[in-house]
Image (tube, rainbow, N blue to C red; front, side, top):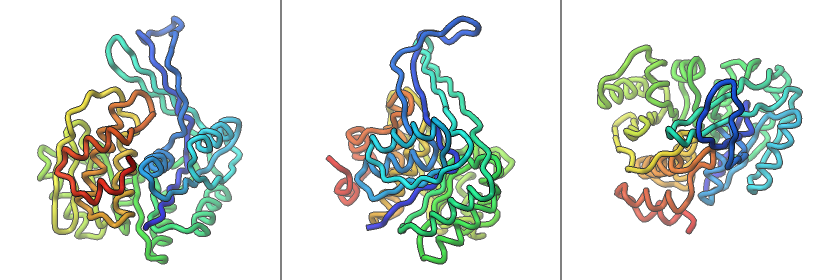
Amino acid sequence: MGKVLTVTFNPTVDAACETDVVRPTHKVRTREESFHPGGGGINVARIVERLGGSVTALYARGGVMGAVLDQLLEKRGIKSKIVAVEGNTRINNVIHEVSTGMEYRFIAEGPILTEKEWRKCLAETEKLDWDWLVVSGSLPRGVPLTVYDDYTEMAKKRGASIVLDTSGKGLQHIIEHGGATLVKPSQGEFEACMQRSFHSVPEMAATAQQLIHKGAAEIIAITLGHQGAVLITANKTLYLPSPAVKVFSASGAGDSFIGGMVHALSKGIDVEDSFRLGIACGSAAVMEKGTGLCQVENIRRLYQDLEPKKAVLDILPE
C-alpha cells in the first residue's frame, strides 16, 4: 500500500564485536566482528524491508567507508538512493564486554556537509515516489535545523505522512514548529526537550498531549527503555510494557521501533496495533548482539504476547 522513503544525513558503517574485558592501554583482543549499514533512517529501512515493506533508503555518503556502506546495503537487497558528498562517512563501534555484560558504544561525529550537498538530499527526495517519509538520526555539521521544516512542508504538499526522529536541539525545533505525523523521542530525549523530569507515565503523556493539541505532531510515541513505551494522540493514550526478554544490546532498538510502527501504518493498520508492532520490533532488537537489529521470528512471537490483531500478523513474513 504505502511506499516508505527514509532519509539519513549522517549514515555510518556500524562495527560490532565482543571481548572478555575492556581495559585501557593494553591491546584488547576482539572476536565475533560484524559490520552493518547504520544511521537512523537506514536502520528503519532495514526493518521495513525485513518485514516485507516497500522502502527506499536515501542517504548522503562519501569516501572509502561510503563505498563500504553502499556494498553493505546492496548485500541486504535494500533499494537505495545515494547522494555523494566530499566528507568521509563515519564508523561507529559497539563493543560487548562478556565478563560484565556491559556494552560500550563509540559514536563518531561524521562529516561536514556543504549547503549544496544537503540541498541535493532535499531535491532527490522531491523526485522520488513515497507516501511515508522518515527523517531519522543526527544531522551532521553544516545541515541547519530548518531542513526539518523543508521536509515537513514537502510531505504536506503531496498529502503524505512524515516521521521525525532526532534529539537535542533538533527535537526541540520539531516540537516548536510542528506539522509532523509522528515524533518518537525516548524518555530521556523528551525530558531534555521539556527541560524537566517526569515522575509517572500519565504525567509525561499529559504533557505530550498538550503539545499535540498545539500542533506539534499528530502522534507522539515515547519509548521508555525496558519499561516499554507510551503512545499519545489528540484523544487517546496507550501505555504498554516491554515483553520480558534477555537483553544483549540497546543499539538500534529505537530505530527498530519506528521501522515496525511505520511498516504497519503504511499498510493501513490502525495506530494502536502499529504501536504494538513497534514495541515488538524494539524488544526483539535488544535480543541481538551489536547492530544486527530484530529478527522476524522474534518479532512475531513477541507481538503475539501484546493482544494482537490478525491484520498485523498477516503483514509479517513467515
